[in-house]
Length: 293
Image 1: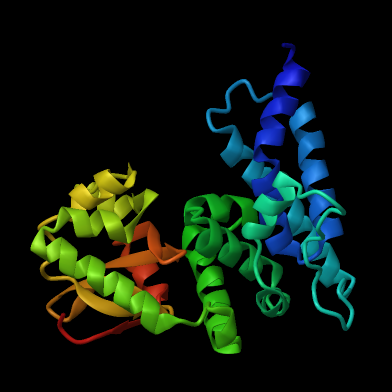
Image 2: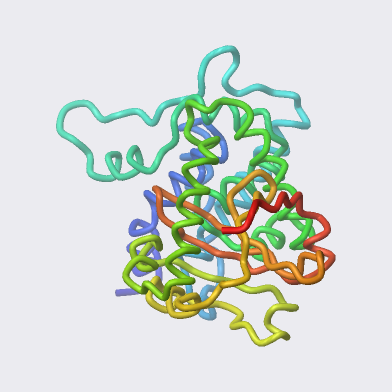
């Protein structure tokens, strides 16, 4: 198998995911297909010999293409959906198409797409990549061209707008997410490893910022079992909090917040945990600490 055949095969394996990312970014099936096609062109021209994670590389590429399209749309003051709702992913005529079914399953409702269309390009990209696909903020910052703290702020502003816009989309279900995080906290304190595993997505990831790493935390922990191991029997002084309007945990000392745990919840399970200990980053967060739990 030559290089082009290998790349084509790998690209097809990731196509449904890339199309789902692009559709959430752009709200248009035609534009999403254009973005995915452009990603293929860039892959065919690129030297990927040093790329360890081709799926992640392709997600970054298609995200950058979508960001350029969103910025161009904004500069021209275009509304690609006019007065109509955003495109649904069209279904094939006749027999079911497995690729379409997978993409449709991974798509978002029309109401959510309408809300996303009110965000700035940077807000939309940061929110979609982090809250919907658990992409870490340092990678999002590289795509947008800003600091990690600024990327976090873009997502936070978007999250607040989405949560306040349409509870019917499910994005504003803060109570349900708080219950998930509080159940996770209770399991951690009680050392209930099975309960921790059930709260975590199988591919859950915990990431720590540079200050946390300097304090002894691992930079990244992957997999539900490994993340559960980090928390089992611990977190006794952590307290529930709202972090930029979303459920989270904080650790405070002498009335000063020293650490923030920012949770990404997908389909009712914890997919990502970001440990933030950089005081500058914490200062940028809107943290409302709850009562003792």
